[in-house]
Image (cartoon, rainbow, N blue to C red):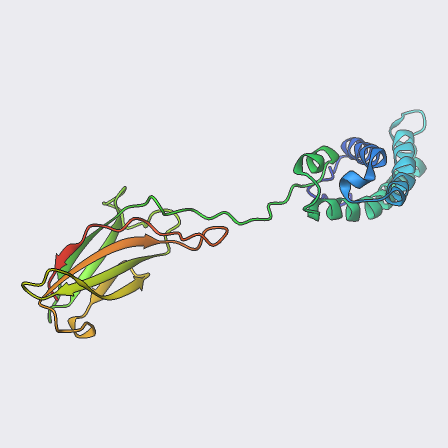
Length: 226
């Protein structure tokens, strides 16, 4: 039994229907499928005898071991020619998907889809260990009781800012992109000239198709002691 490509049925009757449709549509206008008249001729040269051999092998009056063997050989010859053409059409991005479906070939997905996190909000908690190291734990605002990130998120970003008492403005100290569920913030890693610190966070995903940024909204600034 011939192997079953995704576009060509295993059953002989269905394969006969597929090959007849394939040959008819390409013969009608080969340029629609990125082919030329000579390609249509080559396809018909194997489809016509295959259909004739199939008819003999399935007709009780003419079905014999000889006609069945001839049918199998004719199908193998048909597939050897039609399969590469079908692959060529399926791979040709200039051929409309509707034409590919009509001629019976697989419509291939040529672009990767990525889940956007641009609307995914983040919530976080801050705990402290010995030495004053802040342990920041991020969660999806939609499922705060779960440890799972929102669909599409591969990391989160932390931004830290500081100011001294009496100052009117904040100064950004650093930003961190983390992949671990819990991110320690060691006070020794930050500048020490500020008396007050705040952090905010957001989810980060891989770049969207076309290079668009895939980040969630920033959380509100939250006071933190480092």
